[in-house]
Length: 118
Length: 241
Image 1 (cartoon, chains in turn brown, red):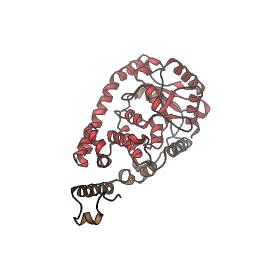
Image 2: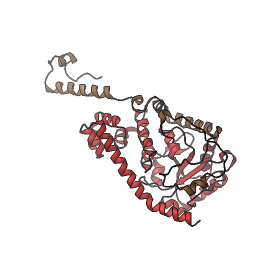
Image 3: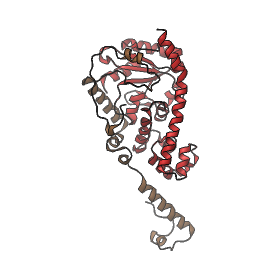
């Protein structure tokens, strides 16, 4: 943390600062300290599992995503579209044609924090 | 990289297809998702690029599934064309192609801004991906929130020095928004987004959450209106098959 531009921190806290400028600096510093204290962590905002995912580099996530996909396919996971009635592309008729005879069973997969399937 | 996705992208590259990865795969890269089961790609819709794409799709033994058919005018209108690959290493993999998305710039601009990975794959830039994800679907909005969170907590933002303004413009997490306003008061004062102005005025997290929901509702309504004529066109195409 930076020290104020004029006067020592003790001077300021004892009221022996050299005028309003130092008082402003003290206020600014207090405000900044309060802001820094309030800065949320990734864990607080998103939970530990998403925080761990956020902590990876984009390339690490990319590679991990591809590994997960490979595992999903190896377990017999479906490559068919999920039912998504909100999609503008969605139609029951098309779903039937999307989901033509590929004998797969759906693999369940745990999502961090119980979030929705991507 | 998992072989089948790699093969699709490598095939596109080998045939000189101008394509940018978007959708779920891009969300994985930027931290908003863990895995996705298809490949969504934005492409340049000009004659030579579509010819290159056709060649690449033939090599992948990809067939168009459902509607619409693979036609330039339908891509230009904003439709997505859905393919399913049948070549051995990509069997069953779906590849969805679009050339125009609501709320984002035309392809040449997206191409200039793309993130180029070391393996040669071009990924939609984070700001463009955020805009593309503002749809009428419930599942896209948590993605938008996480895209910003992941960038905010990263050691280095994907958007560099423009990060504070980008976060203020797109953040959907009330506590982060409050923090951003406190950390970046000058950028916050310049931001015209109503929810940012609420945060500047010291609104509660509940009030900010409500403003974010209102913002989302408005955007979803715009997206639904955008798709209404396209959905009619899709219906007509289905019935004409």
